[in-house]
Amino acid sequence: MAYNTILVETQKEIGIIRLNRPDAMNALNTEMVKEMGQALDKFEDNKKIKAIVLTGNERAFAAGADIKEMQDKTYMEAYLEDFITKGWEHISKIRKPIVAAVSGYALGGGCEVAMMCDVILADETAMFGQPEITLGIIPGAGGTQRLTRIVGKYKAMDMILTGRMMDAKEAHHVGLVSRIVVNKASLVEQAIKTARKIGRMSLPTILMAKECINQAYEMSLSAGIRYERRMFQSTFATRDQKEGMKAFVEKRRPTFKNQ
Ligand code: DAK
Image (cartoon, rainbow, N blue to C red; front, top):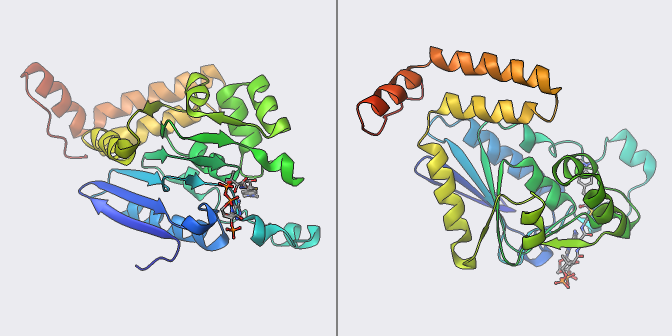
């Protein structure tokens, strides 16, 4: 399938999506959000793919939703069309793990897309921010909710009310970044390596683990623990649990069949 705003490739069991509007700092316009959703769906449906890498270019992961596309919208248009809702939350519905590789700016909707991913790797040039307030709007793709849950009220208030950016070091310190990759040249390589490491595990078990972690943001602790317990017990219904434990006892690497 040919795309205009993203580049898509597969490397063995890993699907890779590169946001590709370099002249616009990868601003997320309607077409890009739609194409990203289509590519994610294809990877989700492809039985060979076990994890996905989402990245941008050296200057920007994504500098937010496309301001030029939004600027003339009226309230009535925004409300009646449910403006830009379509597609944006799509990424958070994907069951396979998504590793974001962030170089340069991840701002506004770009930061929100990164926060919908499951692992965030960043190089030292990465800058995260929710600068919407400087445009006279507030975050609209989950920024006030996800950022607050990740970094806490006071960091979220500081960032969202002032629009200031966090560099990679600060973002890592507050838990917005899983890991900083020191050599910029190897950021995507490291993201693929991380996705590969995940991809060596049993697919149903990967999906269950991701689902349980995400439930931690939706449930009370006791309900979440019960949810995890049932999921944990259901791993014993998989062949891969038998293989994983047998391989340990036999001192060899497991060969998971994703069953
Ligand atoms: N939209 C459109 N064009 C953008 C853009 C953006 N977000 N960001 C950058 N560009 C364009 C610039 O206009 C410029 O284009 P030309 O002038 O060359 O035509 C080109 O990219 C290069 O940018 P700069 O010349 O500005 O480059 P600098 O290195 O000087 O600065 C920057 C880089 C990233 C710091 C700066 O471009 C910047 O501040 N960009 C805007 C960042 C921002 O405010 N982002 C938040 C946008 S609002 C929702 C879903 C999502 C959203 C809301 C609701 N729902 C589901 C309801 C999201 C909203 C947002 O993200």
